[in-house]
Length: 180
Image 1 (tube, rainbow, N blue to C red):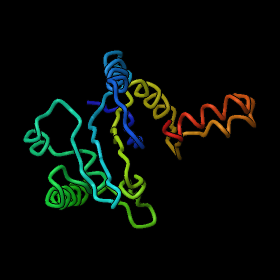
Image 2: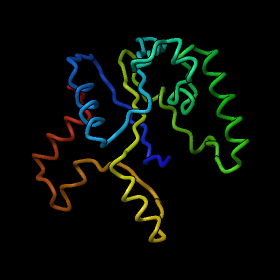
Image 3: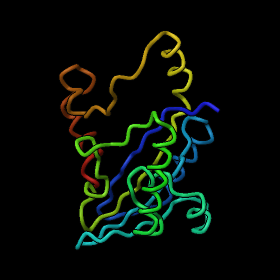
């Protein structure tokens, strides 16, 4: 089975006000076979920095624990708290050792997702497979190409190349970063 490129997106919410729009849009993307949500977690961080995690899927808590949290394994956070985190870390180490090709992040490469979430806020962590990119990725590979880097470009950086005006960039930047 070919899997498309996979991306972890971390979305912050200062004062979550959900009305089902995000879930509806993810469902629309799934139905059009554009993306597949592999895993999703909600993380709540209180004013003292204590974290509470909730699995966002149609799985029961028992099923989520049995199947394991893919995001939890990636970032070292278990659905069952510290016990789950340790189990996830052990499982990841075993897979990396067995595979031999998996490079485990060292400290300079580490991305502390939980540290990036501000106290007294929430975050949605979405592990998304990009189905739309499979034919493009495969064509690039057949041509001898490979990924060197990737990243989202800030709307503010688009002004200089003429894709958006300064006013449009400010609106988009605020929309993407302000949480309001």
